[in-house]
Image (cartoon, rainbow, N blue to C red; front, side, top):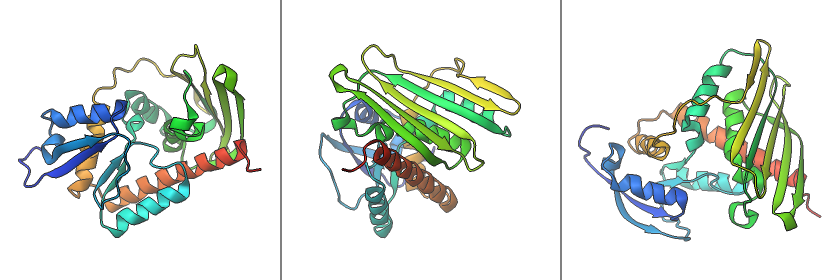
Length: 256
């Protein structure tokens, strides 16, 4: 990507919230991958379906069926659909990935806390928190759902979702999303292996330019530099996580 581009891809940023604003900043600055992208404009709160290459923030949809339909549409039109997952580009995840290699898991937990988040805007907690679920799937493989509960006190803006998952080797993992006033944004990890335990992640450095790194991956896909095997594995993982999130929502909010 260091050579002068023979062609440029026009880009429109849809949504100008926190992530959208960072995208616009990176596109306007002279980075290597930005040379292939020409920022045409940006649009707030509008859905576009125009047969173009798409980079979408996670989660791309709030249902598995909708995601499958979008992917089918992209494949029919021969276009790239890239779902951003900057959490996989964080220094903390890189540390964890190295730590778990070759170790046999016995059990583990991931507990995320943060301030209140409006479900009407960001979706059910299993979807708004899908980056944590993605961490677990990337670290330990595909998971199956054992149980899920949701505690809510809407008058206090408090909620706690507790999910129990199982690996293909029958090891149990707990995933908790807890949000409410006074709760600081934090992740609490506890993984127990046959060879020892890992309790939380040490300070492994600042996450620099993770949205730009994700943009680089998008451009690599546009240029055909990502293998079909890698694309298929990524699609399988994303749909697996969306399917789990949907199952969790159905258990916590059964249809009456």
